[in-house]
Amino acid sequence: MNDNGSGMDGWARGRSVLVTGGTQGIGKAVAEQFLAQGAHVTVTGTRVHLGCYDDPPDGVAYIQADLTWPEARADVAAHFDHLDVLVNNAGRGSAREYEQEEFEHVIDTNLNAVMDLSVRLHPLLKETGGSIVNVGSLASFLALKETPAYTASKAGLLGLTRALGDKWATDGVRVNLVAPGFIATRMTEGARQNPDRERRLMKAIPMQRWGEPEEVARAILFLASPAAGYITGQSLAIDGGLMLR
Amino acid sequence: MAAFNGKTVLVTGGSTGIGNAAARAFLAQGARVIVTGTRAGAAYYAGTDGDLSGLEYHRLDQGDLAAVAAFDPGVDRLDALIIAGAKVAYKRAEFIPETFADVLATNLTGPMGLAMKFRAALAAARGSIIFVGSVASFRGTIGQPAYSASKGGLLTLTRTLAQALGGEGIRVNLVAPGLVRSKMTAITWEHPERLAATERQVPLGRIGEPDDIAGPILFLASDAARYITGTSLVIDGGLSA
Image (cartoon, rainbow over all chains, first blue to last red; front, side):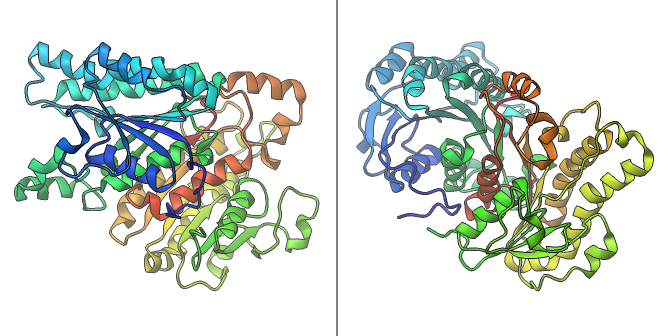
């Protein structure tokens, strides 16, 4: 058995897990960690087939869905009659977030879709005593001035996590958020390939390195596990100490 | 399966309550576990909620810096230092300056002394420190000025040491339990009406158990949390959500 390092193995075996945006980056690492623990994992992505991605996770069920659109959310929810864990990971940023239409588009994907999908799947999670983990960002706490929509959506996700955590606690459904710092994914590729920018960023991180998608995934598995059974409405930063400065 | 095989863990206040639950969880995962408590020997914990079997017990008053300096549990590599030892004074005693200073010595100054004492051993193992804070790390508690100040101090100490020791490969984090069933909180949970009133305020509808805190401590000490430092994790059933 793959040991996740904290002695919490076994609980995920046979559980049903949905990871939105689970084809690449953090979402893919989450899917792979759950697979390694014996879970049944479904991922969503925007492309037609899983095969349209360069190096997709192996062994997952795939649903094509651009969660920006309500019909797609309804379609995804309709695939399930049983669910233990929902990881709301799908998200996007844009270089044009000061244009109103684009601003609203990002909010739709990063925040409105999370609310809608969570509400649609809440009855199933209530049946299993399941949990939701939302993927926030350091932008849940700090301003990223070039991406106001991304920042607002991720800060909004923090508030949503708290409200849903409180609201659904009596149903036995826990809701938490992880806040990744700078993680080595496609989204940060530009910065990683620009030595000046990378040097500046690394100065801000006490651990002086990029995080790996797997390091975020393991925190998500922890929050979804029984070991976190008394934790709800909370956020956990995985940032190498970035937010300390 | 045994994630802490071959690792050494020190848990202050590991004789009862949250500290003991954490110590037993590390032991179950294969660690060598050293615990401290204030009583003369392990036998003196018979009849408490503490189970010291398999743990190396040392008597230590962590509020006494001379005792901290003299403390020698025989480690040159330490994978995790868990500071669970703490005290609280009731009936407005914490408004008396001498009592205030005594609580701060145990809950804040002593923990700093222990962190510095084991700094080299932690660096040798690229280990981590986990302070047991409290929801009182974030908000005032009307009757406990010393407890609140000490736990608030641990929060900023966590953030500062995470910056200062990060270069040595030492991670520093804090867990912030809400109300947990232990000797320290008996005043609340032993009283049925007070317990019911408290549990009504907790979204998950129940008081926490020491094991609810032990799991998160193990996670933060584990390799799974290797990119997590300077953070605090609230474990309160949603009370402060």
